[in-house]
Image (tube, rainbow, N blue to C red; front, side):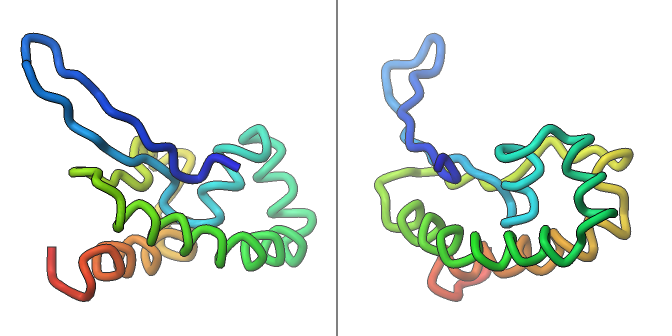
Length: 115
């Protein structure tokens, strides 16, 4: 699974490399971006919410481990999530599934320090 991919990026007109890590914001985000087409995800969430939530629960330990790996890597940037669109991750959906993981992740990755 590709929750966090490590990469080194060379910026145009620069003579340095900037290592970075990228991944999804939370287990639900991983499911909707990597495991199912977006429409299928929302149908599944509506028709089988308990199964989607169970899958997210099963992914959570893996997701937390990838955050730890990313935080301990030589990456200068750990980018989890992004490109949110309020027509897809509408406010109530974002609040339910993304708010808490997005608040916890920076503290986890900095050892509790404020970012």
